Image (cartoon, rainbow, N blue to C red):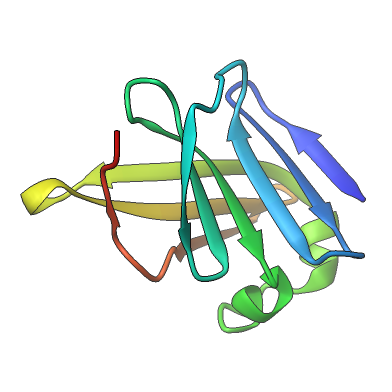
Length: 114
């Protein structure tokens, strides 16, 4: 298992289950929504506070992120933007070392659920 944290987020990756978790530190999850291989976590106000990616190696291969990169992460962040018609878009920002950055979009928009 690989784990890490920054000031705002914690993350972990399990090779055994091939699941990658990202969560905002210190925020309680009150609900979640399943979107295929993605589980989006919400707080009591409906804000997105976490993301679980199942089969993450397959998801990352399309973006040329390697398993080695997952083990060398120095920073992980969820970027959440509100679009039109109450649709929310999510990107995962991964920093490997000091110079390699990936920004990956979650492939389906999330409609806010409270």
